[in-house]
Image (cartoon, rainbow, N blue to C red; front, side):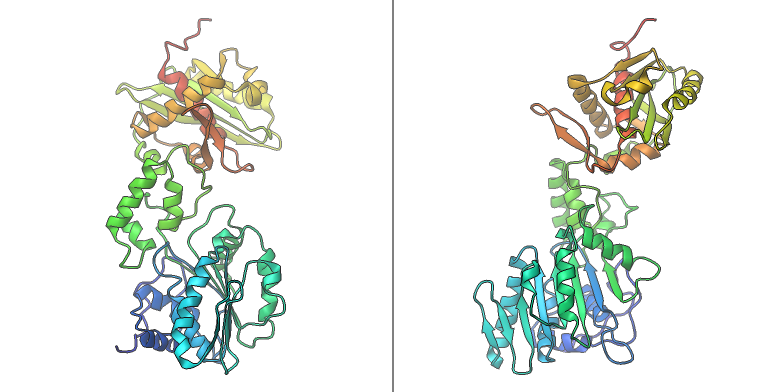
Length: 458
């Protein structure tokens, strides 16, 4: 097997990341891969070449490197030739992950590769270690402060960094690299969500104007592409062993279960607001975009955030083709909002559109609703019915929107809260993120989709 050649700048390059540098110690890893009989994928060669780039002093150029790619593409397997090559160069390597199975699996591969050459291997659970006469070592550790005390290393590998929701372990582990004259911390992961504190900070730094000594590489689906775009699937899955047929099966599985967020993070490597079941899937919402007829005696839904800092109003009305059209009438913020002034401005817009009825929640919207005599409280079982009607209307193509920026922005943060049986109501997936536009839209669609049932005589 010939030594694997370095990749070009365009071959298997990540969607997010800098251009490859001119010099790298990657030949050491490629040589180890050859000896181990590994035929690395182009994206793996690219990632190795990038993370092992060197400066003028032949030291590693990046003190930190973060590799983000979808599951099952071989990011952990990429480590084997690097770890083996580093041990042969006399470097000390620490490896950790929230799930200890991943690093232990790698440890067994490293031990099997080096044992014939006289390396000392200790396999006792919790004490795994490979050491060499040249001073090198490969150790596993737990993501706890006590797991790294008293040790020194040149390379620190942190697997599945998306699972870290605070910096406690990172801060306790950094000192083990202090004595190294050529240190690097290597982070591996797929995409995360709002709770992935460490990964989100790395991504923010790595994609900013001044990433400093951090290398950030991300193979992911373009956020502008819909979830079912097959070209986008390949962007996040550069490994040829992850086939489109496999991704098709997974997509159908998670879609039917209402868990598309899992598919997006694990297989599209895209960030999501929450892993909770979404109220409405993005693919269905985007399919609902269309041309709207002029509003005709529309209903209105209103919602005020409990903090008093945001309020939304959304209109809905039946269209000639049997669909329900929705349009945002207002979405305002304040600290807090002057509800009296907001009500006056909203009344003018309502008069211009000839709004017939307003839906609200008495728990949060009472102080706004009292300005409108034609308002109706929607709570309890009726709210569950209204939520189900809204979701079903979107999923079956019975709802149309043309411009609904606030609703679209709220939907990723809107999840389903199961009440009784199969019934559910909307719930924010993050406590600090309001979803007033979605709540207003649900109430408006409920009133507009059954106008005779909710008619009011004045």
